[in-house]
Structure formats: structure tokens, C-alpha cells
Image: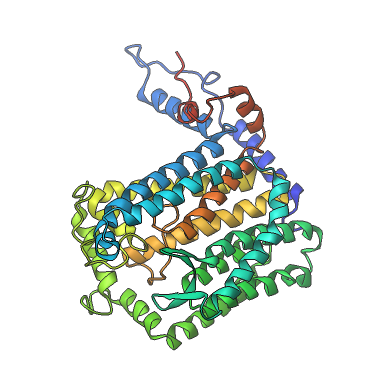
Length: 447
């Protein structure tokens, strides 16, 4: 059956046996000596390759990659929000650190959330699925109520909480859709060969959430929710023709939504030619590329960005990656890409090594959500994709986006603890395991 437990376990076991048979250990392989008695350089390279392979095959590799990449991205985001938001904070709130302090509060709440998420059992996530989705749907309905919902940059997707604080329910809908869809498909695992069980009630529920989000005008979040649904179906083993139909329908609807809204059409035009009107409709796209191009290899230094002085709109939110490129250069942007690649690899590894269908689906859906959002954001800054108005996960300013994402990383950490041998190793390490996380990833050099 699609998404069945046995089908997932067999390829992994087959691959492990094939790899063990095809790649003998260095201890068993004969070592050739050069005429002078020295070992050739290939032996050193094979030892490094063996050490790397051994490190990535350890039970806690996924856990430490998720923990390290999640924390580093959050810390980097805090630093870059402080740098990118100073001028905006001074002009808007009269204080250079106003936006940074709000982000610091969000990180202060998000870290305990990630810690709690890393220790919740799998059954707790299944219990959270329906309440979280229903709560998100209720909040999305409140957004449409006059006097409660707020309109920001042409989109009505915020709820005023009083003072400078707002709530964006669509961010919590991402997590709710991941958990609800994973629980639903896991319960119907033996029936997914029938189209009606594959579609219902997953598609009506997803369309309800998508419809409420689109009624607020947030097309970027709708795109990410669509990716989440497609990822859940892919992990569940849906047939390929379903994805052809879904992608064709999504392309048609996206075209319609772009045409009917002038600001979306302007964003799409800026993607086609970012420098056609650098002082008007394509200002954000053009100045994002200006920021990246002036960063060079190592950047101009933290806090020295020119574009953040009001030239680049949304410098601390949607276009924070451009400020990273300007202040930290190519090295900084590649570091961010490496951290997201590590997080994505770890999430896929968790989904591929588990035998629990719910864990496989939820890990696949959460990883697709984070990676799709990062790809859309970075692609827009680089001029490779249209500007969708979505933040860079864990890095951009915004508590509504940060808190669900940090909790999702905690959920992936919880799933990583269930990998074969992971719980036993964590228990053996005892207190201080997090402090020694990075040291234990790398193997000790053999003498």
C-alpha cells in the first residue's frame, strides 16, 4: 500500500546490506606501499571519507543537525534583525532597538517552545492535530471580521492584539495542516489506494484553509500550504498523475490571482525585469540585487548596510537575506544556505528512517514547509522567483512566523529521538548532552 511501513523499511535494509557488501572497511582492505615505504595519498582521503560516512550514519546525526542548524539560524536572525531594523525602528518607534526587542521576546518564547516540542511524545502531536487546525481556522475567520482583522501591505491577514503586537493566524495554520494531514493519512494508510479516501477529507479541509488565507489576499502563504499538501501526498505514495493535475490547477489559479490584483501583477513584472522601474514598481527587487552585489566576498560588516537606510523596503522581514549578503557577503549567504541544507537533510533523514507512518508524514510535511518557504524567500531576493512576501524561516523578523517554526523544529527533534539507537545514546550521555552536541557529531581520529 502507498506509504506502508513495510515498503519503507525494506529499501533501507536492502541499501544497508548492499553498501556493507560494496564498501569494505579500511581495516580489511590491503594497504599498498609505495616504493619508498610511504602510504599513498588515497589512504588519507579514504580515511576522511570513512570518518564522514561514520559520522552521518550515527543514530544522533539527525538530532544534532536539527539542533545546531535551528539554533544557529535563530541566533543569526536575531543579530541580523538588530542590524537591518535600526533605521526603521528609529523612524517608526523612535528607538533604534524597538524591533529587535520584540524579536528577542519572540526568540525567548520560541526557545522553550522548541525545548518542549523536542520532548513531547509522538502521541501528543497526534492529539494536537485537530485542536490546532480548528483553532487556526477560527482565527482565520476572525481576520475577516471588520474591526478585528488588520490590513498590512495590501493583505488582510493580521489580528491586532493591542499596542505594537499583531498575530498572523496563517502561520499557525501551516503547522496545523501538517499535523492534521499527517494524522489523517496515517489513520487511513490501508485505504489510500482508493481515490476517495486519498481526497476526502484531506482536500476539503485543505481547501477551507487555503480559501480563508486567499480571502485575506496572502498568496505567498497559500503557495506554502499547497506545497505542504503535495508533500503529504507524495510521502503517502499518491500516484504521479495526481500531482500533474494538482500542479496544473495551481498554475491556472495562480495566474488568475496574479491578474486580478494589480500589486501582484507588479511583483510578477519585477521578477521578469527587476530593473525596469528601480524607483517605482520594481524598487524592492532592484535594490535587493544591489545589496547582494555590493557585499563582495566577506561583506561590508555587520551594521554597515546602505540599503537598510530606507532604500530597501522590508529589509528586516522579507528581504533580510539581501542585508545578509550586503553585510556578510558571499560567505554569509552561503552559510545560511548551508544551514538550511543541513536542516532539510536532517528532516528528510528523520522521515526516511522511521517506521511510524505519522512520524514519516509529519516530518516530511514540516520539512517541505520550511524548505519551500526558504526557497521562495531566497529565490525572490536573488531575482529567480516572483516576490511572494513570505519571511525567511527562523531569520526574518516576526513572532507569528518564528514561534510555529521553532515548535516545528522541536517536533522534528522529538521525532529524531525516536530513531533506532538515538534514545539509548541520549540517555547514556546524561546531563550536558546539548553542550557536547557538536563535539560528539565528529568521530575521534583513530591512532
